[in-house]
Length: 99
Image 1: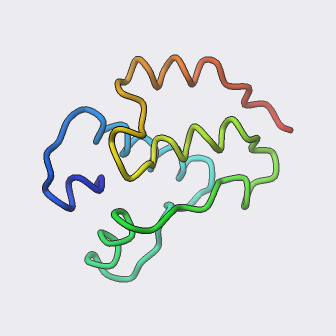
Image 2 (image 1 turned 60 degrees about the vertical axis):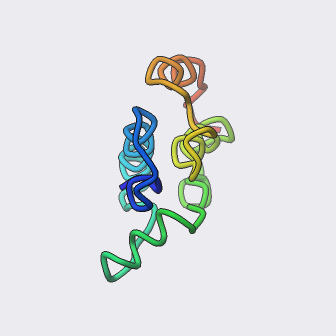
């Protein structure tokens, strides 16, 4: 769940971009950005905890890919890409080859 879903502050397509960030993180890392034992703790992590940059676990992930994943996982929707098209444009501009 995106932070705004947990807080019930209103949803728009940027909530889906947060979910995309979670999926991309898991695809790159092999685990989710947050690993809490209860649903309530997991929801709190999505609202308040900062995920670690993927490059802390996987050496080939560069700064640009780190920044993109973390932008998708931004707590505030205003800090995420504003549309799927914006996210796609950023993705296409990334150099995702090993460092």
